[in-house]
Amino acid sequence: AQKVTQAQTEISVVEKEDVTLDCVYETRDTTYYLFWYKQPPSGELVFLIRRNSFDEQNEISGRYSWNFQKSTSSFNFTITASQVVDSAVYFCALRASGGSYIPTFGRGTSLIVHP
Amino acid sequence: DGGITQSPKYLFRKEGQNVTLSCEQNLNHDAMYWYRQDPGQGLRLIYYSQIVNDFQKGDIAEGYSVSREKKESFPLTVTSAQKNPTAFYLCASSIPESLAGSYTDTQYFGPGTRLTVL
Image (cartoon, rainbow over all chains, first blue to last red; front, side):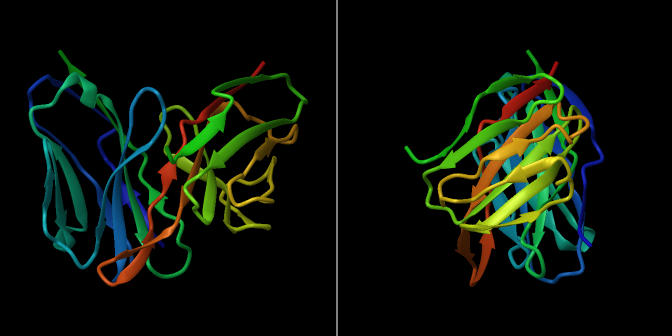
């Protein structure tokens, strides 16, 4: 069985603060894929990143960075110098290579960035 | 521009009525999905289709029906049998992509339809 836990239900920060969104996953598969999506107030889920289990390199894209650690089964997402436009719900998802290819989503973390 | 469209954006339904939500994609994706999202909740899978004329139930299929007559279209009907249909409905599509020697699907989502039962 697969499971994704986003323990932080809501995070509130002031603009320009750094913020880390946690994602912890469970799977018995050795090959799997992890995803992050952003859901702004408009509602559409926007794909941010995909990472496979063989690649533990951290990734940086502008103010966004992702820290993948297999040892702790975590795939955390950090926003540096947060902005009001970063306010959204962020979802972490896991898809294992075996069985159903349907991803398992976490319950999401609502990030509120105050000006 | 390639993408996924859902219509309408807002939909109101009276109790006892069936209603159909539209989902169209021009990404040439094989697989399509329907999710339901309730306030403060994650995404729950209703139905998915890997190929035309074939679809499978997800975790909460009761009270819903789908069809996949064309690759581009995957409409969802919310029937009167669905006891609590008020929710935000998201459609997604995907296609296998090669990644480091293996294949995976990345889902891309439409803008959603907010259904309210009056």
